[in-house]
Image (cartoon, rainbow, N blue to C red; front, side, top):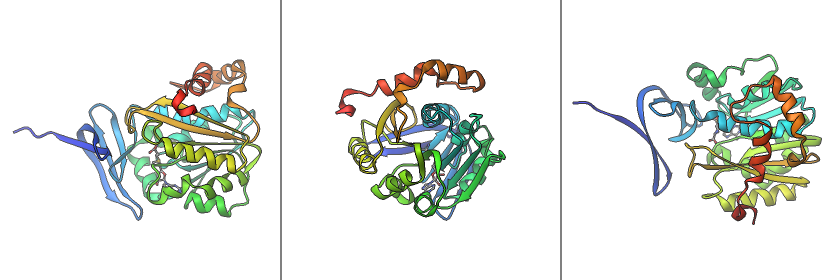
Length: 280
Ligand code: SAM
């Protein structure tokens, strides 16, 4: 008898995303969560935390390029960057590609996620040991509340707003992110599905406004393994508008940065393609 192994995430109470599993590469528990690395037939290796897809080898580039480059290319000279979460290393990998960046503080709650991803997801975690990266294992919510450091760009690469990540979507957190940014600083966060999480996105925009960010722009993109497959990020900026970046400048910088998804047209397109129901 031939047995098939499938992994299913309940993305809502009435919706499952299932993938056929070739091999279970790792399964274990950290102090914070259950961690699994599955080798899936369609999406390659997948990092699963508490039964939720975090990232997969096949579609990760869409997420990691879009959480990093629109903000990093909007800032004319990003030197110091803070990455909160992102334990798989995919975001750090994209930030390292920017020559102007001198230092990346990488604040991840769970040391075990980083350890496991270094072993099983090397195409994502490959730059975590880069000399520009300073890894700090602590809670990102506490970090921004307590630090006196200032950053040009802050990237919040967080899971869904549950458990220890809940506070990464709350009023106080955004105020502290604002405090940790230089006067021309920019923050970006993954902000869930426009279809399933409209109220959450609305609250985030309200909190960012309240925190005194001058420019707040959502961007939308398709990421197949996340709930509804339709995903949003939100960029909040003190000074520079992502929609006013000179495309020629992006094109020029991209001569030295290899991307698979992001280019100067995608930069404009993802902000302009925000659907009417989300704008409203
Ligand atoms: N791309 C993913 C998504 O949209 O689901 C996020 C991936 S990344 C693996 C999320 C990371 O955030 C996890 O490694 C988790 O440990 C970390 N994390 C959760 N809460 C955190 C917090 N309060 N401070 C810092 N890191 C946190």
